[in-house]
Amino acid sequence: AAREGLVGDGILVREGAEFAFAHDVHQDYAIAVRLGMSDAPDVTGVVGPRRLLRGFRLWAQMLLARTARRAPARLPAAWREITSRAHDVAGGGDVRWADVPFEALFELGESRGVLAALAAQLLDDGAVALVSAASRRLPDAEAAVPVLDFLLAQADALAPHAADAALVCTAT
View: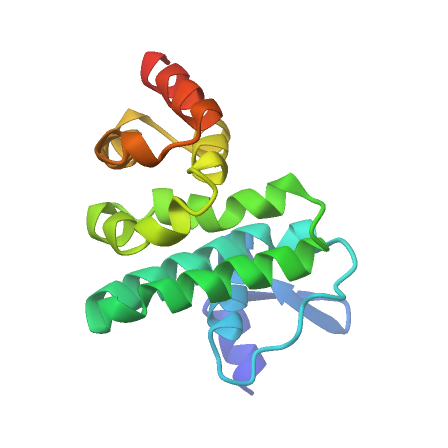
């Protein structure tokens, strides 16, 4: 009866004897919510994990936003969880998955407070990972402003390569 209700609401569709999400947005949200549950499944062994990318990013975004609102001092722990899980899913070798935590950060909207709270983690490698992800994944100039402001404020802590790449980001 519950499935039929979801079909009636346009959340699920029937595919023969099975059900599927009516739209990928519904699937992404379901993945995000499920990853946020205390009994979240271990997705490290998923075949073709790229289909989880958007849902994983949404989960990471939700975790960062919720932590920033409720317990900002816990943001470094939330970041470690996000980056660790992304690394585990990718097996450590997929740059696309390495970018997902940063995408979540870039898509937060107002990310200045989160960037500041994560300064130690983001600067641990001289901001190389942050700048690399920014050069590939910043969605628009508006999202770039807080990231570039953060990098400018931390200029002395940037690795030379990251500083050079950040300059390229500002020019584009």
